[in-house]
Image (tube, rainbow, N blue to C red; front, side):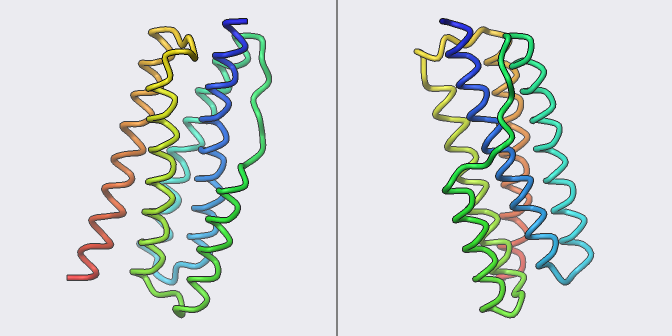
Length: 151
């Protein structure tokens, strides 16, 4: 039963990372500048590495990693597409949308870390904190670019 709780918690993180991968694929397509395309590819890579790491742990616990995204992630991607279209691929608007997605990813990580009932091992908690730290750094890159553009 304990493994099942761990698998469920880790799979929630796989889902949010799947959302990030799809979100940054969309953002890269919408971006006009090469610097944003490059940034979005880097941020996508962060989540791809997270997914690989989480998936290894899930399999080691006897589970199957999920391959889906969540509904709110789909709404985020759709909202970002609409906003980009309406604003004529406005750099600030795209970065603002991406920051919103990063905030959502961080909330999922925080929720998992705060859930003592998940029964996560010290090793899992360390991995999750490390991944959260990387996502937070990505968030700060986006926010800095957004704020620099606004200034």
